[in-house]
Image 1 (cartoon, rainbow, N blue to C red):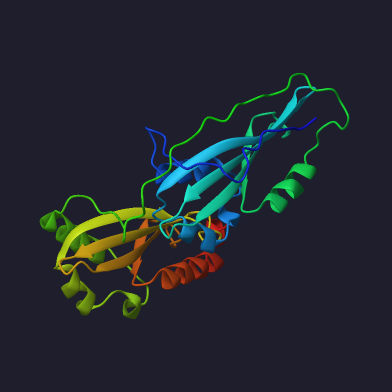
Image 2 (tube, rainbow, N blue to C red; image 1 turned 45 degrees about the vertical axis):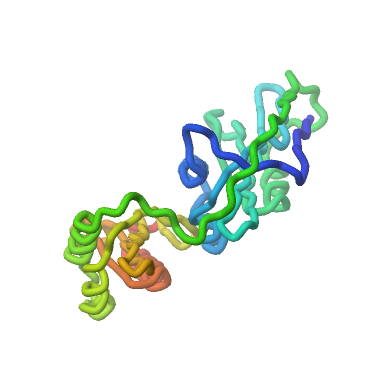
Length: 259
């Protein structure tokens, strides 16, 4: 038996006191077994989200098996919103809870339909979760929020980032012009990027720098151990596209880096 608990299209946005919208996304992606299948476009839109609200959507409990679906909403920097759907169930071999995440309700329904849950059985118990109102988020800022200005720290961070870059093709590394621009960095911000093209065994980070003229400059760092001796290695690229292409290339030529 499924019990819907949908709060409707008028769901409000807010942030939990102990977790930012970015942290909420990180928690969801960290526990979901299939987060690497999410499209890059959706995750890129979530970068810099302003507020978050989550709600229980439906539940099914029967004969020791259960599944719940949750709706996770983010208020975006452009004033729009984006929803991810989470499926939680214990239908695996060992009965431990498993988490999956999907970008559409249709995908969620397909995944739910594949679960080996008893059909037509009476539920052991039903869930009734009231939805509390959530405050409206503040207006979106004009650009990414950086921490307090600290030019010495940001310039040093940029210098160390460029120094540890070990791109196999040196022409793909950020050049002297980028290094000169980063001498004007006055603040920086680091975030981990997720998505379908971040293969198992690789990590992708965006290092965003705020320059003195209020312009922003980002470098993309790839961390991996897809090396002949398994040594940890860092590569740095000027664009996200180049970094993700490098991940694909490394993963295809080093079988142990694949999932």
